Amino acid sequence: MIKQQWIDNLETGKYGVTILRDGDNFCVFGILCEMYIRATEKGSWKLYGHPVYVVERERYSHEVYLFVDEDFVNISYPSDNVLNWAGLSEEQMMTIVRLSDEASVKKAIAYIKGLINEHR
Image (cartoon, rainbow, N blue to C red; front, side, top):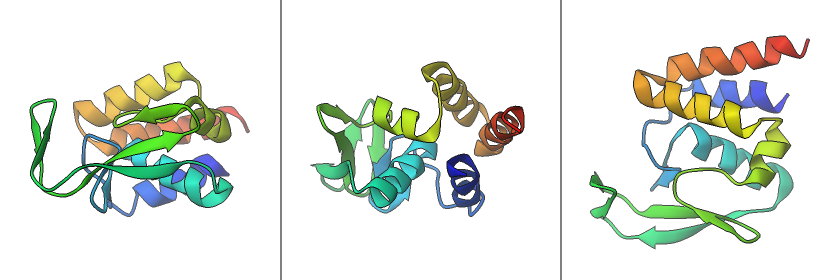
C-alpha cells in the first residue's frame, strides 16, 4: 500500500531535484520521507541552506532541507526507519537511486511497481 501511494505521488510529476527536498520540490526519496512524516508523525525537515545554496557542486534556487529522524540527519537519503516503513531494503533503495539518476524517474517507478508485483 505504501509503495502504491508512493508511485501515485511520483506519477504526478512533482519531483525532479537530486536532494531529498529543495524548497517545495522533492526527489524520489524526498517524496517517500514526506509520506513517512505525514503517516507516522515522526521525522521532520530542518532548514539547511538558504536560496542559491551550493551542495556538491549543484546549485539550488530554493531552501535546502535536511531530513531528520531520531539520530539520523541527511540531505540525500532516507533513514532506515523510512526504508523499513516502506518495506525497502538498502539494496532496493540504491537501485532506485541509480535508476532515477540515470535517465528518468519513470524507470524507478517501473522498478517499484515490480517490487509490488513480487509480493502478490
